[in-house]
Length: 241
Ligand code: GEK
Image (cartoon, rainbow, N blue to C red):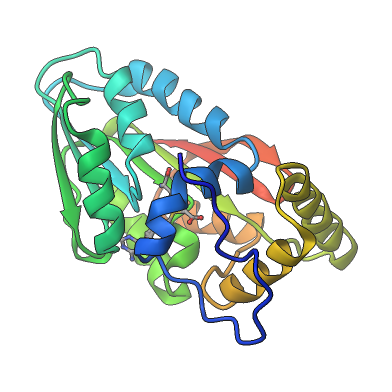
């Protein structure tokens, strides 16, 4: 695994963060060292897939990056006739994802698609995952994609939504950010790397708070949902249609 050193050198003119080739090359390391409980989310997805997968249905990994969530879904598939659609709008991510997943998907067929998830149709779905992707969509597109997910899910289908969040309470918000930065520091990111990455991503990754997420899930039509994970300012919801 290539080590993420993208923000290790001091740079007075930090460019906006992009999911380009440089990032794709170190992305596995970046995810694991930056997102608290990332692995736990992936393992939980495999477990949940075993429970919620339905025969002859589709699974969607929206914003698949290198395909770790797709692999977890694949491991959890214990019925016949399933197709996994892994979608990402970054060409660099999709091309690495194809290499990563080559020969690893045996329980289902897989289509890895380089497109914006807003252009994708969702239908006959028993599993839909958005693992840290909604936060990169324009705010006015977020309800639309949740509506599309709800409408494309079969009854009894599962939606897993993971997001970095903010908090209305300034004291708590800052405390959770500090805990996250300390988590990154313990994972060998320097204070300089942490602050330069923050600057690069602050206008690209726009967090919502839990109330907003929950209102959106409700508006989309979900009645059964809750957090199954919160680790500092990172959360994951399960929603069942
Ligand atoms: C994982 N889910 O390992 N359409 C398609 N892809 C998008 C869009 C969009 N509109 N916006 C952003 N992306 C993965 C991790 S990373 C999370 C997801 C992070 C893609 C973007 O190109 C990137 O690959 C991914 O969403 C977000 O479980 O970087 O924090």
